[in-house]
Length: 525
Image (cartoon, rainbow, N blue to C red; front, side):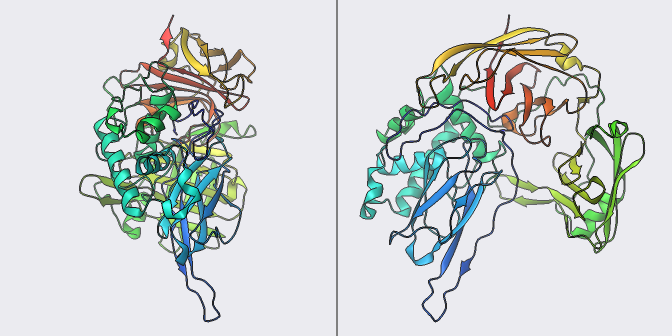
């Protein structure tokens, strides 16, 4: 996200090394894994050993389909090309291991952006506005003129010192959670609105706030280059990086509760399978193909079998079998227990994963994730995710939930748009969202690049409309999707409404012809 992660950007400069950014943003999705790294040994014929690099490219959401280039000590780059980011912002490539450090540059993709990072060793090297900011801190140069002369490149100690100073200030000023650790360069993270990604979200809040003393990323970079890191204002955006606990939960409608997954957060594979086999788990089948409306509603997920031949069965609301699979004979499968890692200041929880692939049809493909800390069970059936299910749903179904009908009226907010292109001067626009008690929602105003046709109307109708607890801190306490286009933990769809713990609206975000229509901190007229 963001999930809760789509915002217009204000990075106007286009100098060498200055970040140029389009304002057309895509959905934030994320995955919790990180790539592995390895070296390829040279041989006796003089083949140079290679070092594998991988990381995440993000701005508070994944940067998708971007191209990365590397410039190493002898002028060489990636051993194979192109190196590009995937749908989660993940990338990987290899360089000659004896030519590190290497300068990494990213361009293109969605959102369109130019970023810089440095890799000093094999393994994780992320690229984000925070790696850009740390390099500016280390060199006091917003134009990155030093990149042309390798003797002027900052060394690892200088970069690490700048990155630590940046992290300390982000935490003290409220842009990063107090428990955040690591480095924006070398700490693996997912573009999912948590951890380092939440800090990226908060920085984007700062530079996009019309009332901010820092008008855009260029001014932020200049502040850092001038040695004024401590002059960064305190964070005052709508989504605090530190998690909030709901104090005024909404009235539920068609709710499916979270799962009770016991007291063992780090089971063995056998213990995990035993736990999952102990119950038939209620799940909301919230998206189904038009040919099978009878599946929609509260169904069930049943796990069984053994470590070597385990089973998954998904049933629809009418009790019929949607998909029933055994791991034996599968093209690919996975049975991975959820886990926890105590880092002292915080604990990292990794989800469990159950996956069986015997083809692409609904009856041949099931994918399920299980989160111990949240009690979430979610997944899909079919190679294209034709059937989607999850628990921890506060409202779904044909009836308009009270959380939406209570918003009846017209909401408005002023935001910057870029009618002259992503690098043109911003202009202020007043956007509105009008909601009726019957669940009809009309969006009007201007999209990021002024290319969306408005007004546009959507209606709460049941299929792919739902209210859930905020998956990430940046989503607020609650998140409502109207016409969701992807899995629940991914910010995608026609309209999203984010609420705080008191069920007050944080933002409306609508997607019109690929452009974002946004109302942040809206006011009801």
